[in-house]
Length: 68
Image (tube, rainbow, N blue to C red):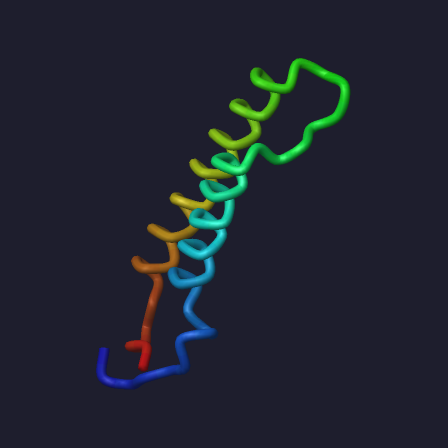
């Protein structure tokens, strides 16, 4: 990698930010409605965290430029 790009164009940075936001939302207890709150919230958070982790890995593997 010899070229650079702004941080906001990095797929890895965005996937990581989403992962952090999901984790914070889980800690703060996002409202889920009138269903089994604990089970649904845990399932949703686990799926989203796994997906954003995979996006972060994919972003790093396919990156062609350094970030500034």
